[in-house]
Length: 224
Length: 242
Image (cartoon, each protein chain N blue to C red):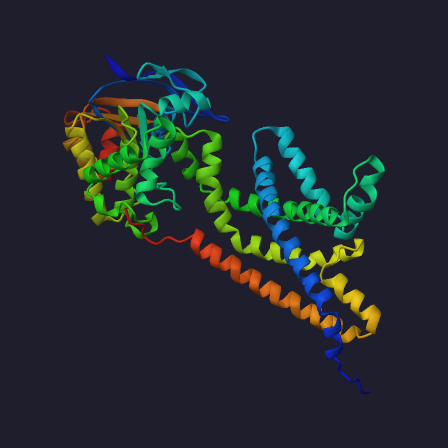
């Protein structure tokens, strides 16, 4: 069995490939930022004193964590128009990614919040801080730091999972690979290159998160 | 005029009756040590005084305000009563200075420069002015506890509640913390301490309150009570801790 590798032929499609890569980067950036925001809000709701908010957040998390992402995506893109909510494939893709990431991050950040020592809350209460001030200033920053590596992993999972939005023809990296191999039949090369790009993206993402984390969570002495 | 007045306070943890009718009046400038065995209700009593614990019956009036666990009431009380804990409870993600300036900025709307001045002032009082920019994890237990005291002082409370604040410290660090308390007492700060430091209670304290099984079992002038305990329970307790 012999197979002649032909990566050179992919160069004819380098624009498609790079456009796809860039789309994946954009999808990832937007859904990571919005997903983290949604996760923080979800976690806050999950531990809110208002029972309705707690139940709502719990229902959201369970609904998303116990259904396949591709079904969520299809529901948003093909299902919602039935009740008059229409959007472009890219909008639908971003929305599905954000909703998905937000649910997992809600649960991760909630775990970080639950690990807050009780004494921290008592000290903050005694100093006169309101519940909201305590959550934002005392509970959230260390909670986020506690679960930061899990947050990073989940964001990377969602970046890789963004490949699924090729199914509603968002022209991202996997869509590009599909397209190229359907034209030149170089499946091996096309998907290998796509995989390599994902690998590099994951690596760069982790690197960026680590740099941000090191800066945000530094405990180096501050000068006056 | 009493600063803290506890009247017939009862407290239950479920079925457990932990405070069984506490009456206690504390005047401004007094240093009161609450002593007793673990489980006697002394920490619970202290925590009832600033709204960290609820009570089912009776009343606690502090600086003219009724104490309750209601958030609004607790916030109001924070202007009059500070609390220092056994486990320091400094906020780990904030520097020493940020820990201290947080409440004055948020609650009293003190400006940035003034907050910094205030923080330096209270840090000097506890002998840690050089730690302003440092994070709590870099400090020893004794230093952390002194920062916690400074953090409370920055709110300029009339009463400082101290819940076994030297119990988690290495023996050689206890002295520095007690020295700060002694200095506060000398300046006229009202202190209510749950403590096992009998020497401190005797030498610095004005009054001792001995709690036993949820009641004030014996109370009076610190030197007097500790030198001549009247009840067998207090005699036994003093024999055990000294």
